[in-house]
Image (cartoon, rainbow, N blue to C red; front, side):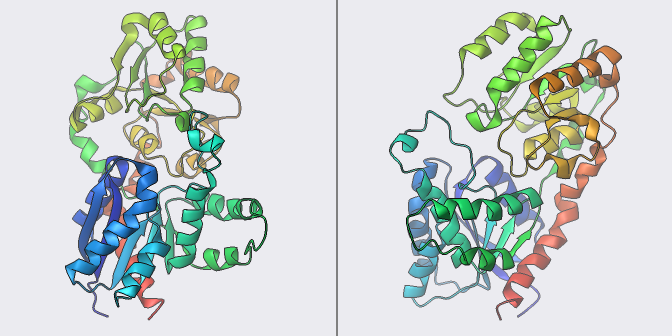
Length: 373
């Protein structure tokens, strides 16, 4: 094996945070990486069909690879069987951005009533079995995936194969999400510093798993208490806007300074640097890239004491157990004026910057190949 590997990178969902991760990896890796992608739409169909489409593309390319790097949206078992049947046999690593065993499903998802919701978790499970190496983006995610498997397998009537969990754990390791945090630096300037009143920030997808209803409840209570603040509501909007959002708009009026996604990265970065307090209410964050970005830009996070967040922030004060406690912490930041000072641990987020992680990624890929030679 030479020092430089030739890697086949499969991305069935080339959009959003997945695309940023892929593009960052391509920029910093010393390995030669060939990219195969599909558009970021129809995620359930991607989990079913991407393996067939991308296996055909890899076979047709005629290329030989030292390593295939897929992600959790790929059916690795199907992909592996298809390339094997074409006479190809490459080591396969799978990077888990999320997993469907424990991903909270919106009550509006019709697959729940149709009893199809287990299938996507099963794809993650068989992919983990078929891959030679597993990378997960946080320690929380690794623990969550492994600990979810016994209950998941117990939902099936027989031949539950629980002994396979140990085999999965043996080949799993944490490889934190690489991010381009340094790209945010050029948008930090005096014009984006705090104003007369604090700016609260929402910079996530407006979807069920990010807990928008809890966020709206917190904001509404802060208004009821007569606290003075502005708010910026960023992030993509799905189909889950509610009456609660309209109510908060009426409560805040012109203090809603931004209401919806922005047009470019520069505008997004500008809001991050301008914001002061980040109330987080997510019920799912296997890593939490948008939270890390806001913290890096100096936002004071107010975080639920769960998910991946304790890996990012070590100060217990910034965590809450109940919604009432979250309101109290935000109110204290506002009343004491502590929101005016940037969050003291913001620079610790640089451990996730590609400048710090690139070498770890390249070494992990080399080890993945070496472990099966």
